[in-house]
Image (cartoon, rainbow, N blue to C red; front, top):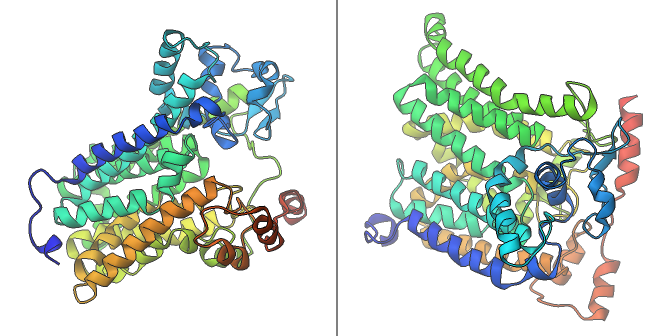
Length: 466
């Protein structure tokens, strides 16, 4: 209990711990050798987000991506590439992630010949650069989040919260073991948006509201569905208007916020329209072909939260723990804008995310689409840790168990003990706690799996929309 009631020593702070964790985890990324031995992290989705950088700076072929035909060893899975109207290729993924990866790509490009590697865009220096890039933005996200939390909570609560979310959720997996995909980059932008909104709420300087809306626009350039981030600033603005008694005059006074926010959002989302125009000839394009949303299947929401294929609360139980802090958040006056934002954002985001035809989001550890949401759930989680005094020791012990379980299961997934998309309760309970499987155990596990039919669900979308 003293951990929360007494100040931490001056040399202990969340930011210092995050710096140490960044270097420790970076050391692991370098020393485990995946960037040297394998194609990691340029696999599956990560390759689709990254492809724009070698296309522009090395092969000068953004129009058609024709260089992929000369590099079959890097493109054995072209599921993210489609034929464009010029007979070349188009990545279905937006280029926003590549913009954040750019400084690290350039570092890898410079170091490649120095270290004796070819400047192909896919040799080990590039792989290592993008792996470190993902980890950098992951730790930076929590650095920013710790800065915000420190305005409302003790240093002990802030430190506990950021360490739990970094190591105890699938943020760890996608920051350390499966770099290059978009979700941890989005978490960084989400936390940056909260940082600007927090300043706006306390100081009411319209510029910071505009900066927050710029983060929303840029997030949509990474994943168009992340336009839903915009519900967070709407929640902040709505509460401020509500506190004035829904006064029309007060709403007019918010004119600078509204107009500058729309302008900033438009400027930062505009690149995606330019890209679509360049790549397809149309200002608006849908690059996911037969992939889409089912909006009349509430069972998907249940499976997405509690199912053993990918259930958010099953594989990220700390997210479920954070929900128990919402009642405390509802009555905390100085945190009411965060509660308002959650009411606007969370139900709609859960509904949209889990209405996707492939609600389990392919081969991944846990439900990766909810990683940015952890930025706002940090507030109820921190309040829960602070306010539950009677059972605090038990609560902390449970949170530490969830953290250790998350790290263990992350490696289970990496070692292919946990199946990427076909888990069931029976297979989950069979592999629980196992570090390796014999051939006989693998056969038993496989017999307990339930494989999804991606193609059939995609085809049914055509019938659904017709």
